[in-house]
Image 1 (cartoon, one colour):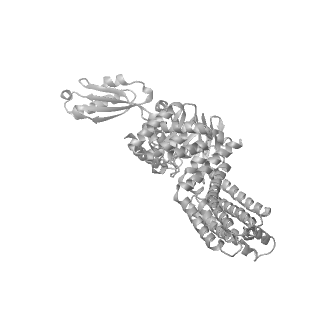
Image 2 (cartoon, rainbow over the protein chains, first blue to last red; image 1 turned 45 degrees about the vertical axis):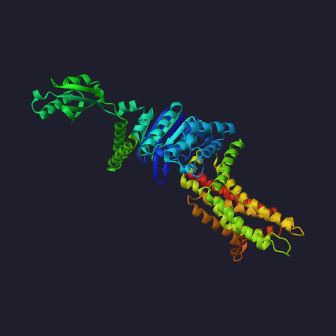
Image 3 (cartoon, rainbow over the protein chains, first blue to last red; image 1 turned 90 degrees about the vertical axis):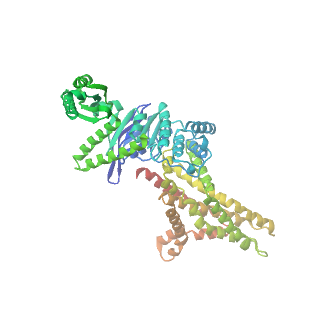
Length: 351
Length: 244
């Protein structure tokens, strides 16, 4: 449905997008991840036809974005970053205008405007001027406008940035609902959002795609396996508590395939043990359970799901290492930036 | 196929026109224009015991367009660039020429909305003066005013397409208009081809022909050509933004 083929963009001497290629089959809901300046917005703008690529091609529903832009854009709804709208226009008039711009007939326009007002929960503000609306409402007006012509492809650039937590939740619910029957590309740096909505992830760094695929698939290819164990040791047997923990740690480390063990003391004598293992080692749950010294009680033992966050960080570290061979020190900085961004983003989105 | 270009352009023109009236600026511009031309009409046109002539009104209107036209056109594209709404237009199924012309016609419609009420003046004049005033100069005067307005607006569109700063667009438009008005003085200082070129670009001689009641095709062609050129360059500036 969306094909991006070896797309490049230079801004002056800066090579902002360096040969990006990916394909979104119909029904894909893809998340475009990357820290600020990774080339996400530029890429999405090239897909939307706002910026022409310096090299490479973009096509939507079989129409080339450069040669057949009008046909391609008819299949596409686009919500630009920060949702620019005309503040002096009432919501309904704005939607009418967008409908006309997309060449909808009068009856069609009337019908579709009512439908998107309903679908995006805009009934209360249909006669209010867009400039007076809250950010969350503005975002929904933008989304409603992008849906008017029933596009098969929807491109959303940072749909929840700058919203407060309740607005984030509303917008995310709406986006998830919309994702059910169309191809979508959502750029975001809010990882939980992408994890909740998308069935495919494309990770950007330094203007290139560093990883792409389903979350599970990426977890298998990039993440190490991990287990969480919660255990209470029999204090009377081991005597000193510290020595008992040390023994536990050693026992765990002896299990084949385990690379690292971290322990956290919980309340009432319980200890959480996080075990890192290599991916090739298979299911280690039984071996780990056996490694608990006799008299110890296990109340939880589960494989740790690789979070998108850990995948994202791993991919960025890898990208930074590759870049680092070209520019020593630069990579380290970008990891720190990404981590900082990421923490901020999940703070905002997770609430 | 034509409809695919005309309908979105018409949507833009309508939006543009309604946007002038949704903001105080549009009403203020029209009110000031009518107030000043009304004063001129009352004190310089409606003079008893003199042959009825609208000359003073057309002269004053021509001068008034000097600040008014750039004020109408300055936001046309500059404001879209500044707020980012242009992204929504440039990713809609509308070609760049249709986008630019739609915007331009929106401003021309506003100009018409400003000029139409002034038709009260010639109608009043006809009612009160005896003998009836000569219609030729009045029609020529309106044709001239319209061509002048369209030319100024197209220069304004050009300036507005080159910047995201509406104030800068206003000043550049004013400068372009003044250049057409004043270039004649420069022409007297030089000889040869340059002199010919400069006089060809000069605006005042054409205005005085219209003022005599002459509607000459070559003058109309001059106005139309310059306006089309300005719109064409504006299209190039907008298209260039895709490549920047």
